[in-house]
Image 1 (cartoon, rainbow, N blue to C red):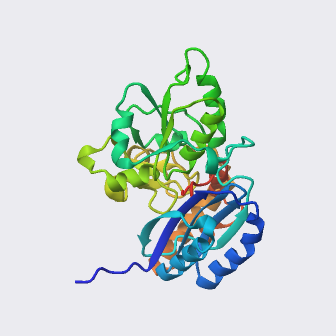
Image 2: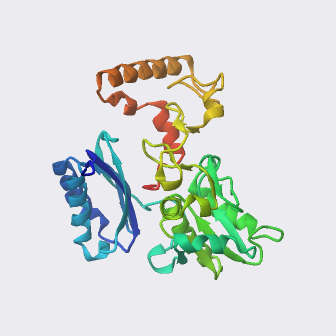
Image 3: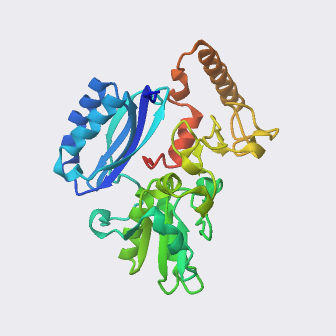
Length: 332
């Protein structure tokens, strides 16, 4: 019996690379994706590329091949997830100052990142009590799963990470004395940039998980794993567990927070309208609009149609997602 080829393929990718001509790449990349029916978001900046795209497998691989035809992207890595539907409504190639926003001028992760640690070697590193293990993701992501011994900086966005490092580098802080530091994130982009930042602050021994949590969950058997919980992902799966099996969370369509069993059982949870995290933050008019959007989405689902209204401009969920800093590509 031959395996079934997925109708669509979702690919997350990023690479830190010197890209001074990023503006010149925008138009041809947008045109190629449009011609191939590929949708999603790609960010270009002088420090590299980041994003998530989806489409028919052959079309997505054609975009990857076009990128890798540029010698600077020859080593571009990506992560694949098959899906039976197109998760995006449009394709956007955007120019940014940074492919993941930290807000620290002068960093060059392409030249000054820390030491990669392969997933199969990660357990030994974080099991060393002399190593400080730091989760570089946002607080809402850490809340549904993380590694043993990992410190949660309780950041609301990646741009808050430098302030946390400064505070924790003071006497009595977990980073005082510049210890060995191991960092991780969903797909690798945030922890890689974090290592460049720590090295700029005088930290000599800085490590990051190659391929991020997703590669670890894909590679390390569950019985040997030091991961607990689910991993939040920035696509329709919401969260994944070991073996990248879809997790146990749903997404609040109002505030974009991941919801577990406890939140879904809350009296403040109303599908598409509110959850314990955003209850009481909407005006009556906004709640009516969200309720109508949910009704239209359910009607479209029963007809087997996509409901584009889920991404209409002015949607409160979009505003919250922007405040949360978007994805790794971030990815991923």
